[in-house]
Length: 330
Image 1 (cartoon, rainbow, N blue to C red):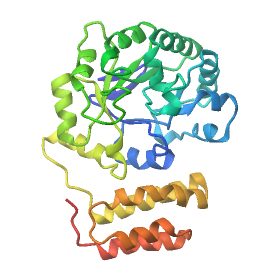
Image 2: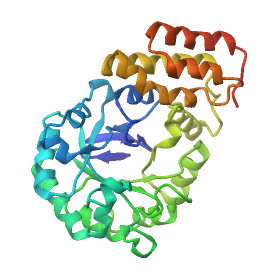
Image 3: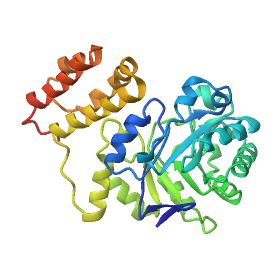
Image 4: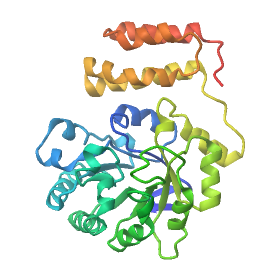
């Protein structure tokens, strides 16, 4: 039974990764419907929070139906991180997660996210101050190291556990790798199987199928897996993994009707949360993924990503249901 603080997550929880411009409340809603056990917000800048920047503050939006939900944030300044943690705690998430894994240049090369893998002492000091500043469970997401020469995550995990983080998620690549090449699950397994480690260890990277998730569970003993890119446009991956874990057989793939209904639900939530214009724009990146594999879809997709009429978009989505009702997507 995986447990973070007093939060019970079940035998092998499936976590939704915090993905910038993806893991917003509308997307989290459809993932929760399909079995995500623990979700995180998009990562939030500590500096943005303490400056009260609108974009950062908006990302604090969480809803009771999402629980358990973690708010993830990042930064390289100890005082800013402490102050931001207090702002986050006031929103009453179930936990606070610190991002030490983001590889993008604008974050990592400014001494935040994965950049702190180059200064483990500072990472530990920041984490310690955040832990001391809140009564909420604090968790960490990080990578194997900065590059192949600095894969020091076993030591990092021990040191972070020693200052009372409650769980750790490891993305099985270095910062230098970004998202390229296979994730090194052997090193994730080394952390989980380190006799010193007592907190839950979750693995992240390449979890694209039920078979892979179960293989990582059986081979490396991880407490659960975090799913990122494989869930974009395919929130059904959570229920498919759970079904496979419980029965050993594959669950039927979502029908076109279900794909349409999920896209409609996602759009409705997007409109509610962001307002009409922004809600329409932010949904556009999802349509290709929801309907990936449908033949001759280009014309329909162009309608979905160019229209500013809510009625026309809903009508186009209903049209997908009618046109492709007999289609089976492998």
